[in-house]
Picture 1 (cartoon, rainbow, N blue to C red):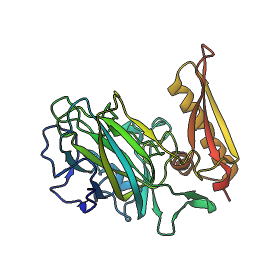
Picture 2: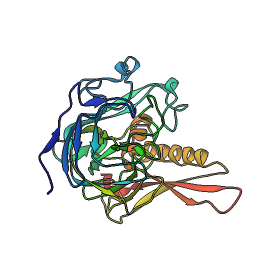
Picture 3: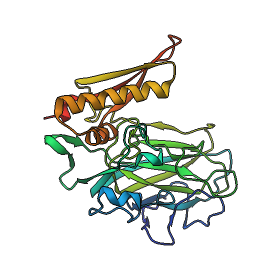
Length: 314
């Protein structure tokens, strides 16, 4: 029988900021159970609606604030955990950060020496941006993962074979994620709520927000995978439908360089055509512009393009 009465709130006992297979589970469930996770925004209070750009020089968080770990009874290495995202709801505010360039994160740290933050009002179900731009919202957890088999503490930042910080914007309500189990009990954790994100998350943050996520769990001994797999219906564009796009390209013998070129060109386009500042354009690219690898076979150069949905513009 499915138990849909499990619920986890954020507190000192249920939040952790690193992966470690030695963490004690905060909840033990059976295959078939359902859990509601009340995930805080990813910094767990370090950023507030009153945070300004200058504050970012002094804000340091040790990792994403993750709820868990949840132990799944009878889960053993070699199993697969099916994770059904039954409902996903965002908070009433969010933020997007461009960190100081000296921190060397994001896609273009060399272009953005100064920090910036944008606080989003999400209470009306849309992300209101500058100059009449509106970003559609499709909330999802950026981090969905199990504990790795390697002992010790591990950063929550890089994704792993067992999931973690995947930042796949398609893991929205109704999607299913499959993760390989590496340790007894699986030890599932979730967090890093996003209200919207472009493929690439180029300035290193999406619209970061709190989430309420209801998750169904099922052990799958009939599956054999080595890395995450998922099923999803959307959003394949920011509005979830085919629509008119404006695209910039990057061409290089290095995929990262090609991505940098494509995003830099999109920033220039947004600044020139829509009177955005460079920081505003970078933020918009991170939350609403999708990077796509167009070709990988015409050596020595590859093509990456940045897709801007024209519908979000006034």
